[in-house]
Structures are given as C-alpha cells and as structure tokens.
Length: 515
Ligand code: KIV
Ligand code: ZN
Image: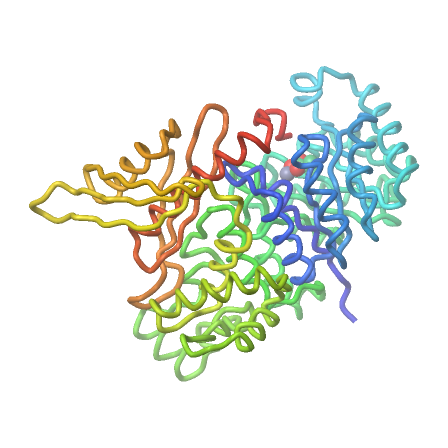
C-alpha cells in the first residue's frame, strides 16, 4: 500500500495574505466547508491573534467544520498561543501551529534576538501550546536560510517541548530542490527523533519553484505538504494544492505516494477560491486553468480524438472539469435545483434556498444553459452576501462611436429609491461616475477585471473591482450576462462592503496581519 502525504491547506491563512485577497467571515466558512469536502487533512484557518476578525472566523470554523484538523497559527508569545487555543478549542481535532524565525537575517533585523533567546522562546511557546493541545506543529520561519546546525538545535528543542509536526518553510522561495533535499536529509540524520514526528514542507513561489521544492521535500521524507488552492499566498504565492495532488496521483507508480484528496472536487474548489478572492486563475495555469485541457494545434486535436493518451496525461473529468456540462435550464424546478446543490455539497437553509431559487429563475430566463459555475456564482452573489445598503434597480446606457457615453441609474439606498444620470469616457466610466455621485463615495477604483465564467456567447460576465478608501481595501464582484450590469453590480458590491466594514471590521494594518 502507498504511503500517505497529508495535505495541509493554508488558503485561508497564507492564501489570505495574498495582496487584495481578504475574505469575510461567511466566505471563509464556505471555503472551509469546501476544503473539508475536498478531503484536505488539515485546514489552517487563520492567525487568531492578528485581529478580532481573524479570531472570530477561526472560532466559527472550529465549531462548524467537521472532518479535517482545524489549525490556528501563533507566534511563540503566551498571548498569541492562548488566543489561538481559545479560537480552535471547540474543534474535534484542534492544532496549534507555533512559529518563530530562525535565520540570522530575521534574528538580527526583524526579531532583534539572539539564538539563545530564540531557543528559549521555542521551549516556552511550544511547551505552552502542548499544555493546551495535544497536536502542536512547530515552524522554523525562513528555515531554508537558517544555519543548518542552528536549525537542528531549533527542531530538537521543539520536539523536546512536545511538537508533533515539524515544518521547515522556504519562506522567501529561495531554495533549490537539491538544497532542500540536503537540508532535510541532514536534519533527519542529526535529529533522528524527527522521524517520530511528521516532517512538513511549506514553499513559496518567488522563483517559481514552490511545487518542485515541495516535491523535493516529499522525496526527502516529508509527509505533510503545506499548500494553497490556485497557488495563492504571500507575494508570489505558495505551492499549489492542485498541482501537488495531481503530480502525486499522475506519477503514483513512480513516487508510490497518495493523498486523501477527492480529485473531482479540485476544479470546483479552485473556482470557489477565485470567486471569493477575486484573484483570477491564469488561463495557462496547470490543472485548473481554462486552457489546461484545451488542444489547439490540429495535429494535437487529431491525436486526442484518436486516443486521449497521445497528449493528455490526465483527464479533465478527473479534476472535476467537464463533468460540469449542462446542469439546469429554465424548466428545472426546485427538486432539480435541490438535487444539484446536494451534489455540489451545499446545505442551504430554507430561506436561502428560496432566495437562490428565485435568482436562479431570473438567470434561467436570460441564459439558456445554467452550468455548475453559474450556480456557484449565484450562491456567492445571493447567499454569501453582506447586508446591502445600495442595490441596483435599473440602468440604461447610451454609448457608441458618435455619442458621449451616458448612463441613467436607479438605485435603492436602503429603502429609498434614487435616480440620476451622468457621462464618462466610456460606458463603464459613465455608470461609475453616476453611481459615485449618487452614493457620495470617496472610494478609489484601484483595479477592474472582467472575465467570462463559462463558455458560449451567452456566458455570464464576471467583473471584479478593487476599491480603496483610506486604509481599507475591498473587492467587489458582480455577475450578469450583460457586462455593464455586471460592472455596476461589482462596484455596488464593493461599496456595500466598504459600508459594512465601517461598522463591523476594525482597520487592521497590513503589517500587523502578515508575518
Ligand atoms: O512562509 C512561512 O514561513 C510561513 C510560516 C508561518 C509557516 O507562512
Ligand atoms: Zn508562508
């Protein structure tokens, strides 16, 4: 029987540290359920001491999500560790993940600590975590740039204090695969007791080596790999979950390793992350990109038609792509929608189901074929939504080559109806100028992206905007077969989030939230 590699998903923690990827509480909970459905072994849910919002999200997920180990991150200080434990203790399988930097660069310039002080912190931090929770992971931040003998000492100390998983991160994405193998091999030789714990790898993608380095670590004996869906994460991101899983599955005969991941859930999970974070997956992204299974050259197409193995080393169905053919249409009723949602793993409350069904009917009137992606999008729009101050009621655009683009917009502002018009350099600009005037917002439009979420001429347009106001930055998303309506919805969605955050979420400076 093959040995197992544990999949430690950190999309909700390191992934959330991607610039502009912050998620609200409901979105985090939804994603955590999806990760459980995907079959990840451990979900790193957040960093409870980083902010009250992180604390609440971690404790909600710890209470609601069953299956995987629920892990919270903490520095070595008692306050961080106790706060982490408070947040995760209701999970049936809690884990505290304690970390401290061990490289001289970090000790000197970031921590201002000596090696002796770091060792003392490891003893006290891991020891405290162990007194609260049986399952304790310890990470040597910047482990790949740490003096190998000091790394040995740090790991030996953490094991003596009770750590059950030892993670050696390539925090800045600097190492080379053979160096990582050497480092882990040396560690295992010098600290044989590490073989009684789980050895873990955590690689960043600054040089595009995160997946290669993670695999190198696995070949050197790591049996836990820390990954993010779509490879999101701090700076250039983390090793991509779907790539690691598919390498292990596709090359199983060579590597002799397996995971607990339900591979047909990879594509739906990837879609959900991209929808929630607004970070679009590049078309040529391995496994989940739009072109990952598209064959263009005639000779390739001919080959694949005769025998898929000619150019396909895995099938789209295996990763959950292509099983999403037509699911529903305008004649589908409640039972059909309910059955499809069941298959997709959603358990909606009656009122949410009713709201979704109504939105589904409206969409089905505009769009002949409703795909899984359309339903995922509707759910994000209708169910995960935050309270709305502004809602689009109606809009009309006049635009063309010989006219000044103008927009007439009618909005609900709470219950009050408002209408106005304005112009702009193009139709989107006209709509945005009008909405800006009507809402009185000072928010700046920092980014605007548009994509089609399914194929075909009647595909839904997905617009994502990033808005900034003072210290706050939010994403807004809008979906509609009409891209101008999608653009208006995205802008209003962002403004509603900003409005919500003014009363519900304290501003947390980026440097307080990241490591
Ligand atoms: O990259 C890193 O070093 C981390 C640690 C906290 C594991 O994210
Ligand atoms: Zn990291």
